[in-house]
Image (tube, rainbow, N blue to C red; front, side, top):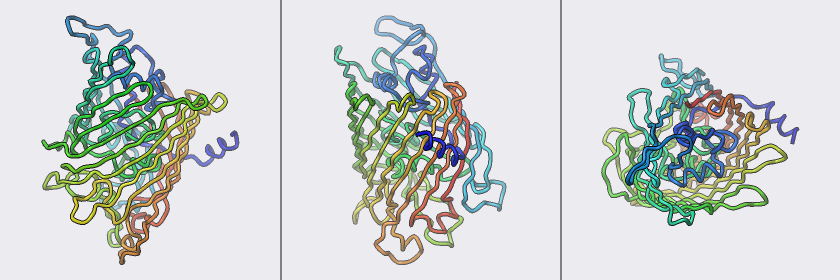
Amino acid sequence: MKKIVLSLAGVMAAVAFAPEASALPVFARQTGMACSACHFQHFPLLNSFGRAFKSAGFTMVGAQGKIEGDRLSIPDTLNMAFLGSMGYVKSNQTADNTGVSKNPGNGGVYLPGIAGEASLFVGGRVSDFAGFLSEITLSGAAAIDSGKLAILPEIGSSGIHAGAIPFATNGQGASYGFEYLNTGANAVHSITNTVGNALGGTGDEFINAVSAQQYIHTATAADGVAAVVNSDMGFINVTKYNQTGMATGQQGSLGSTYVRVAGLFDLAGWDSALGFQSWSGSSLNDNGGVGLNAPILNANTATAALATSAPVAGGAVMMQSKAWAIDGQMQGTLGEMPTGFYFSYANAAVAGANEAPNAFNQGQMTRSSFNVDAEIGVVPEVVTLGAAIRRAKSGYDSGILNGGAATGNNASDNAFFLTATYKFAQNMLGRLSYVKQSGDYWTAANSGATGDTTYAANLYFLF
């Protein structure tokens, strides 16, 4: 084990950009508990207590006073929290030397609100059976980015909570309604907690190396209602939603369906879980028909950026949400070192003839990924080392990627990821990360346009 740790430490360099975190002083203030009470190793990974808090709809109140009356029970203080990030990012993509605005190929520093994250969170107990959480982005044109109302009353004294969670998000997908595994089933909860990148990068190098669900781009805009039943044995989440968000949301029929089932169990002393996810149906999509993760097709477009999920002129269009995934985790200790193991597999089929395009796959073949991650606390509650591998099929024909005719070969898209964290304080985390991507997908054009290797170093903080 010591040799493995030393080997990882010797090759590690760089870090991940800030998360849309769920490790929030909003809830530390409400419960009167330290951040480590809810989090495994470091925020935003959840432990069993953190899962229980979320499962009860953010309602637990500890040292904080309450205002109570007939059918009224709220904290005596409106709780808020701030999240900021800063750091440095560098990739091997072709540097932009044409103007003031550079890209990660140039390398550069980012600060809160200036390529880094600056977000205000407001939330907490609404009643003894309901709680609220919202995120307000402070950079650029300040706006509410995500919000949800968890209405999850307990059924008698059974320990089973059941109810509905209306929600909207500009970038966490249908799983934003309710999720607590650390596999990347929701982009926030993973060993890298990276949902974006600074300085105009593609924004997904790190999280796509860690999570299969995020590799097929499930962290999109979404608004809808999640019907949830949960207990200490796991949860079921059936969500009806549109593929739109708060920024450009439109009324619709909630034609897409998301189903999530997760089971919790003890495996030889390890806190373990297995889960399944399914996306189906069709609904309005903010993407406006632009392909997610669209490839660079030939050298003539080598300086172009990958298409993103941003809306385009003309507004939302109808698109399918068509994918499925399985995942699992084990959290426990090796010796005295807290350790987590995580895996995920996701599959997004190509839309058939005369069907609306699939928001999770704009290629010519099935898009799929298998990811395995591990993180070990070499200095418990202070220092972690982590690694992940990805073996994926991009969904794009390798011949078309090179500007030629179709070959029938589904271009491979693999990755190797290393990371280290140092917890300066429970609410202040430094991270170094490195990702190297390889395979048929990484043509000269794609590598030049987005870079197949990225380093980063960042510090993020919450208060």
